[in-house]
Amino acid sequence: MPVLEAFFAPRVPPFLRALVIGVVAEVIGLVAFALVLLGELITGGSMSVGVSLFLVLFLLGVAWVLVVCCRALLAGRRSGRGPVVTWQLFQIIGSIAAIGSGSGPSVPGGWAALVIAVGVAVLLMTPSVVAATSGTRSED
Image 1 (tube, one colour):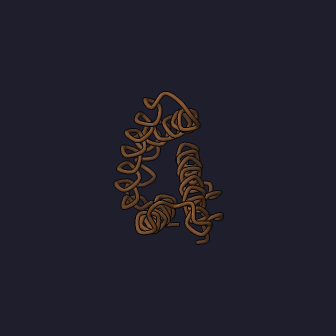
Image 2 (spheres, rainbow, N blue to C red):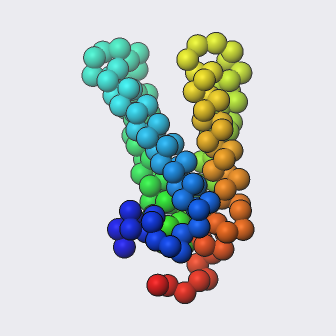
């Protein structure tokens, strides 16, 4: 089933839709940050080519994993829950570090990432999302 069709399926609870929207927002942020790093790398603004390449590949890899997890969750499979909740924990830790820096553009971005990560983590644990992604329901 195509992703958009699965997203709008009547069996998908509203909290699962909200969770997927939150994860997609994180994916967009990861890809945007990877593009910024790639731009710095191409224009010569990077201090370390190796670190920049690693970060670009890492960010794109995490984005890909999150997209695959969203597809699994929309299909009712539990396999997407573990990686998503793990990423939310990393996001919360990174957001707190960004907020703790106290100045610059990282503070508002840190607050935005923190709110999204906490929201996704809470939504992931709601009974309707757990039931929809338990893998025990009958397939349509």
